[in-house]
Length: 264
Length: 258
Image 1 (cartoon, helix red, strand yellow):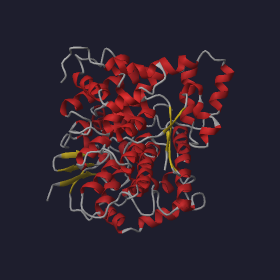
Image 2 (cartoon, helix red, strand yellow; image 1 turned 180 degrees about the horizontal axis):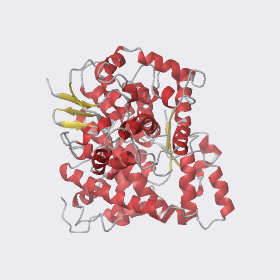
Image 3 (cartoon, chains in turn cyan, purple; image 1 turned 180 degrees about the vertical axis):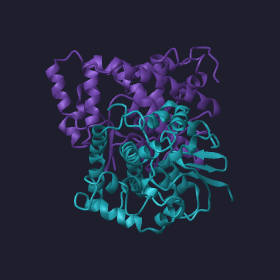
Image 4 (cartoon, one colour; image 1 turned 60 degrees about the vertical axis):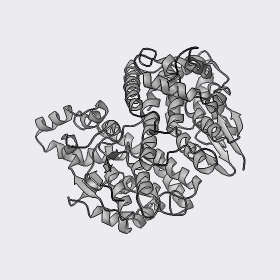
């Protein structure tokens, strides 16, 4: 059965890095449609779309088109890749380990997915946009639908990201980071005895934190996470994913991510 | 291994594992916690779930506290009719909509519910008692939610935004159910169980937006789920007027079945 598998991706970082690792673990053949997310190319109108992807809760995340269906949401995309493609399963076999993988996906998706892109975008995307023609950027942003996706970009331009705001976002990392550190004291991987979708999901959000939040994630404060990141970085699948980069520093390519919980 | 489920009313997150267990035919020991009496912040329960959120499921030595992954666990672990479609695309669709419900639709709908129901239900108690209750809540995000509900601190802007999102999400769900009979596609699944717990009372709480004229597919979908024996059995466990709202899904005598 040969079905068309097409990945719409930008630089291999954060949400975009996840499916690249999973596809490489599966040794899957796929076509890449590359776009520059930091240049707002995802709003150019030549992307496949349907009800789910038009709502895109992760905003500028990857899309996987497989035989007519557009898969979005990077964690469920990992489960889909594990489920639908031949090769080693990336889901834990034991139902309780599978529960833990899904619970990590939900927890880290909410807590890191809403914080890490803010810190990265404030540090790298904001100056990048400031160097572009401002009328062009503002026009592009004003046209973004739905409004939840537009707001993430507007915040880069309207003075929301003050020093105090970014400190509060950094402070929100403490709880999820310490939960991961604790879990890694108990075992090498997040969900059971083997490397799984939980690790593929967590790694891209954690591996940029020594740069974005050096006081929160470092070899002294979080020795287990540091060791874990090193182990995953050495995997062939991760190296292969990073070889898809088209800029010298994919780890500096950020776009606004999930919104934080509206409950505060 | 026995299953113990700590839950409140068959509603929102508590109702998800309740209905899933009922559909699978898994007997469980029910431990009812009264959310409005803050049972979930008492030491006995915090020993089970240190986060103090409901529901929690204990299966032998395994503890599960996230309600949507908990539903998948029940389906994976126990015999009984499968509640996930076999097709990977349909399974992805099921999960996508469950996340849409959990992360987008439910927080806005529950903010409205907390402002008009949960807040007023506890607000008559002395402020010192309420403040002491807040101090016992482990998670900062839950402390904020309770403080706002107890002292009516939801801003007009955030309530307006929640109403906007509830309408937007209701219309998205109507569009989805015009494409497919069930959330995952052709078969009843965990996605319907999740969505039903979120939406069974929408025709009552949002009568202008969710009704037979404007959202016929949602109405028919809700009634089809309500007719399932597992749903009847689960909602019969409700102790309050909240769960009794489900009766409005009863088809009127003589009404045609779709």
